[in-house]
Amino acid sequence: MRRRKHALSGAIYDVQDDGNLTVTARDGRVGVFTPDGRWVSGDVYHADPHLCGWLAGPQLPPRLAVLPRFRQTESASGPPAADRSTDQEEANA
Image (tube, rainbow, N blue to C red; front, top):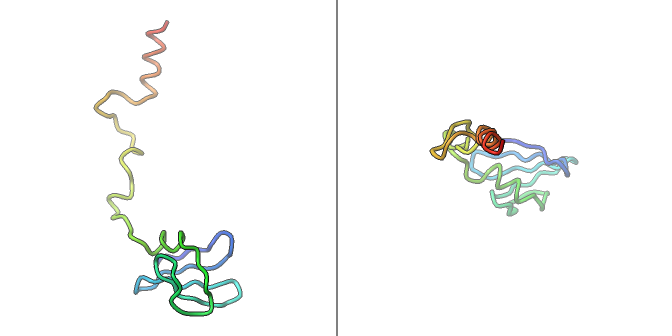
């Protein structure tokens, strides 16, 4: 399961098998929330909707988790930007 500690509140956000999240506050109180941050049950009545969505919302398939723009490949428009800058410097010289 996916689990994270909230950076500001210190609460633990834990995704359950049914897709909802269990939020455990620092003082031990527990609440259950939907992936969009809506309260379902428990003694904790507030959760960070952004963290809920990030943990329990739709997930990318593993093959799409790495975006092509971050890969080190040459595009059809020519060599990487670092090589183009040296070509321009030679042309200006």
